[in-house]
Image (cartoon, rainbow, N blue to C red):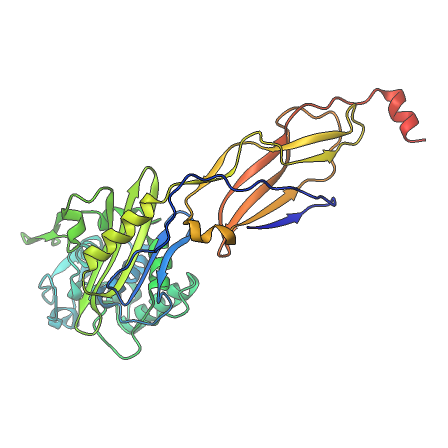
Length: 371
């Protein structure tokens, strides 16, 4: 564990050892996937990684970025007229779009995410950007903006193409962002729905391709499957338990549902580590004009983090103190904060407050103390 102190004062702070009662995870999960990662959706903290920066074909996991760009740059109520190009695309899963017919952008996005319909991605790209290739450029720009620097898209559907590749790490970053978009989060946890064409009797029932959504796996709430000969079986799966959401990415897996469940179960089994205890004395600060010379600094609340035991030595605690406090000080008055980081990511923070009151020194004592 590392301690960083930033303050206007020179402080020596003694930190107690971490309190934990969790199990000793001597071995990380073993998965069949060539590349995999497990992250906390709230913090981005990486709990598990295997070849996470190795570039892979993502297949239909591509459609997550297609949906992000469509939801951010398009209008769901827009009526889209299907082009000949979109209607001609008949590879893989499709909803049989026909040239000249009309359907809303919202229904196209539904079909792309829920049933992985490839023809809808052509229509989405052409409508949202006005040009298919420009839309793909937007996908790449969005990926770069999110920090997915090892990602390059050549199409919006995910069929194998030279240099169309990404990594488990990049996909986790992208998915973490996507799940914050409410419309996206709703769609990827939808088990089945119906899409309707505009001003027509035509409709189509969709069933989510993610089998975990149709299972009894506790807390499952997304995200997307991907399959091609080159990519193999891929899956991004998310689940939430007790307010904590995890994202598992498995690429080129011999058992994508098995791998994902194994990673998620392992992640949820990690018991919290107490890294700060409410009202536990941390240090003392000199107080100016105080009836007492010092005030005790304590965390305002207890902080517990879900961290595998193997990662505990990497945990950093940064203590930021305010300027030298001046009396009077009430118990609970803010004095600074402590920030917890791992792998360069902030996992949490807690306010540091006065553990007791310090009254102001009487005026004549202050006067003579300044002489």
